[in-house]
Image (cartoon, rainbow, N blue to C red; front, side, top):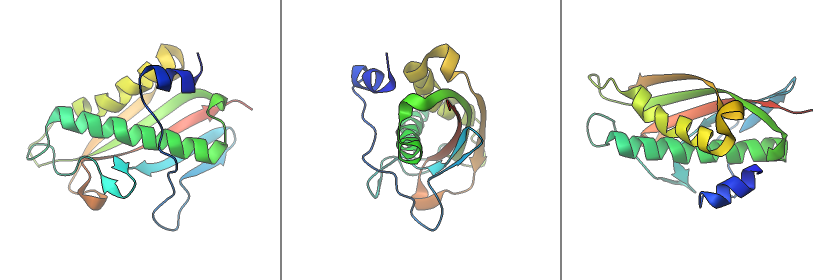
Length: 154
């Protein structure tokens, strides 16, 4: 089953575009790798889940934000490489969580994106290295921002 079929099966859709908001590329290709810039949980210009974990955003809402940001990252990947069927493997996921000083469950928030990677790509292509960290603030007060590194078939 290809990625588009899997997205359809899960009733998910990638955003139409993921153009960067400033003077940087949404993705860079180098030696068979795609480095995708940080993505927020946005739909158009609207941030879907805003605020801090540990205050006004629950872990479940943070996980939904991470899933939405991952779909934007895949849209940026599509825009960068032109064909998502070239994905050989998801290598790395970095998740930045807008959180209060005493919040310590950043990993649980990042699980929203990791779980979706496994749902979409399975355990072989979807097994990835991951970092999740708490940060004081994110652009547009988003609850999460994430980036991915992907290996591509030639």
